[in-house]
Image (tube, rainbow, N blue to C red; front, side):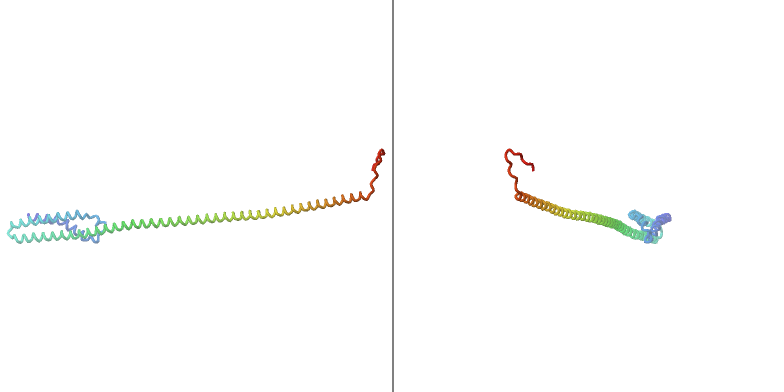
Length: 229
């Protein structure tokens, strides 16, 4: 009976020793393996093992009373129970360490997620800044082109206005010259008319004077034929 219980304890403790050995090396495990360990479930298993170990100790202690060397049997059972509980406690310590590392890993993951998000935001901001700068350059270039085109149009308009002003001045000068020429022509006509009138007047005077110097023909006698000139 005792041998059966002993082998049963060994059978139950082998998985615990294997888990303890695996967890003792947790510091060198990949963080993804640590993340895969269910701490709550492992704690439940350790509690069950602890209860089972205590039940075995109670049963072995009862059996010891049926033996001749009761105290030695009880001491052996107690030492085995202490050894098993110590191993379970060691596994709990390792599990606590794994839990801390999981929390630290989760915190790191959250931090990395936040940093990744902030980095994505920063990248987006930088991309938006580049787009804004590119848009501003395009707008500045467009404005420069529009200003250059407007300046060109203004210069062309100024040239046209200046040419129009020059033409207007030239037209005024031409009109003035034409007026002067017309005035000269009218004066010449006037002077010619005046000269013609003077000559005509002189001619009339000369003719009248000539008539006064020449004796006039006698008056015709009534009844006599008039002489033809």
